[in-house]
Length: 396
Image (tube, rainbow, N blue to C red):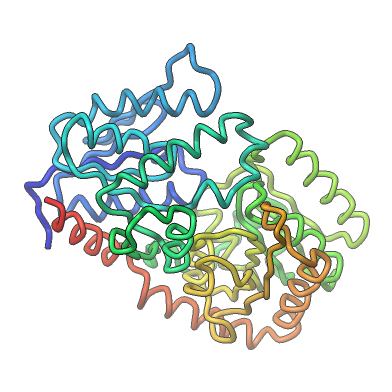
């Protein structure tokens, strides 16, 4: 269903080398594969890129708030995509650009839903009043999009619940992918040693940004119950707010005093170092309280690492309980912030499952092998791109 003569513009905040989250990873690999199928351009934030067909935009200097900056970039993107046949936006940061391009250029707009603003109320901590603007951008764009791609079946259900005016038949499910040639077991240990991780000692690893949805405080609470022989390795940086960063720093200090054997890597590591870290982990933990899919679980699985993850969002569509890892039951309270109904119980359940795999390395290894096989068989980026291009074809 490829249309190499069709001009498609991907609209995104993140694009290499400025990738900090799952949406950025998605766009990076989707773009690589889509270039075989359509005439593709990428429109992103930040400094100029040297890559052909990639165009970068900066916010107007007069607009310093995150939401205002996003809207100014969106307006510039509308001018930048003139002449394309279809625009495809990713996240609220670029959704409004897709919507306005649809109106101005009279072309179809496809939006991929990586998360939903109504389900991330903690973003008000980071954006203040800008949260109302980000919510406006998302709602306006999604309700008017010609087609929506949800990265999991659960994300599709959430989209329908949050925006009931969107017809269900306009929302397709196309899971995220993983490059299993790039993400594969790495036997080297130089990156571990450089970051203070002992490759000879069992390790429990977390990789992610310091943001409410990733649930890092619950893993830190769980770690107090985990065998102190195991290293707790937290590859966690880029806090949403200074206050959240300080909260995590205090919790890590208390954990170090309580059990020791904690390695906190605050910088965002380059991809090869992350792959090596995942490859040598005994258990990878994803304690998220909100996760539309969770590419990081696929990354760990592709590196043959057993996963302990929250049974929420799209995670059960990736991690097969009792086969590639262990899922942790989760029930969100009605406080609007998805706080666990029983925070201490949630942390204990994480510790219990991590402890099970630390005590049974043979099972952990078996889960790891099964995880890589699942990643290879079901989550290739080539398949993601082909299904995406097929959707484009229905609109062109």
